[in-house]
Length: 238
Ligand code: BEZ
Image (tube, rainbow, N blue to C red; front, side, top):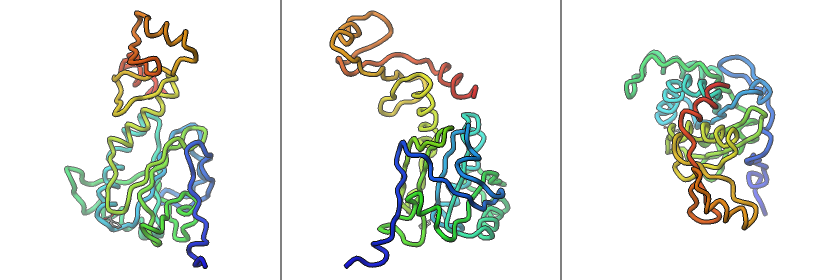
């Protein structure tokens, strides 16, 4: 027989789903998600607990990079299952006391959601009982301007996120949309991009023989140049 915990439903939003809706209290006032963020990309992320070391290193890094994300039309929203007063006290401690890797006097200006009921955390699959029943894992949801989930990354409690990767994902998703291309392994702005697979053998043959800027490794794998400046023009102009 299943225990009560095993019967509990933990939903897991998937790529391509509408971001589940919720209203919440945050350190920056009330929010209505994702409605308040329509027209922007947003990274909704969770952390296990306030006043813990890995989370502190991550929050300082998120806050330090907030402007860099804003420049590519991306807002940040954090969440943990702690209460508002814990959030406020922790963020004040970070600002007033913590100096870490050259970052100091760091003010977190993006909203941090209080979720003591775990309502939002459960809706977003942030509570993963095999890891912890009482703390959210380090989830990262990349949500587009229409409120659609476009990528999801989960990290365990013990591992801090890679911020180069979070930024790369936001830029890559926008580049893929803007230019109708796919991005190969380890792609960074300025690297060659993948042209969608040709629909017929004839087109594929033409492509392989074409002398234009396209390079085909085989009929199903063609790349072309996409200058870095074009990427930044597209993602930074919005
Ligand atoms: C941390 O942020 O350091 C942490 C939080 C919860 C469990 C383990 C580590």
